[in-house]
Length: 287
Image (cartoon, rainbow, N blue to C red; front, side, top):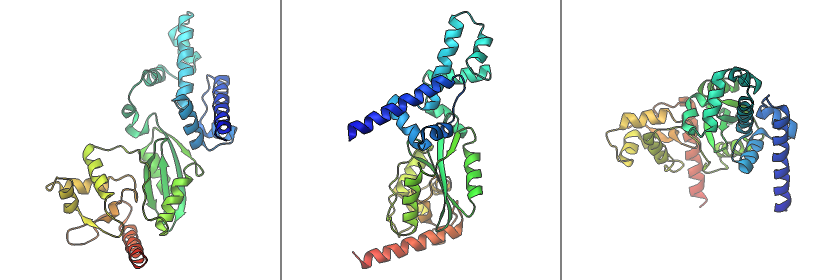
């Protein structure tokens, strides 16, 4: 069975490579590739990268760069070779050249440049849930009362990324999060791919240690990470948390026991805490 599955994946990757070579210098979006090969764009990207070490987009970029180099070696003027290889401008050539020469992923993180982000928006018990992910893990989880507003927020944050709606591919994660919201999933240990400072990571990791049904104050979190005077910085890190629920910043309250702020709305925060306290009570009654 595993041998057959491996052969099927190898055949799929080979067919994708052939197709990209056939349509060169035109590039194909993941949406187009997914429709052509009858597979979720998210799974297509993961399968292709697992087999080749690069994404379909990077493979097409390498084809384009090699084509450019070949044309120049054969005597073409650089300007003619740039457009002949499919680049829209010389700046696009330099961007792709840098990527092919191994520029670090962090260079492309600003506004998502060079990234492919898959996302899904579905109804949930608190309105709408948006989950966005790279091939490495979840990069954004948002809650709100409007699917359109959540998508607009994603578009603004990752304006320079290739964004692909893929409800099927991201469905495994959205289903687990909804199960959590409905009380069937006690915790959310999901893979994350987040942009953060070292301090933010330390705060977010501490938040993930707070048990379901319990809360902490900002000052308690600051003390727990060894920075008792960094209460305001802790609050800022909570406010910038990009992954609602998985990083449970809703469990942080003020010293006077007030709810404090919440990026996705105070009513959602109150509802989450009430749900978790109810879940904890049921768990204690049924050990």
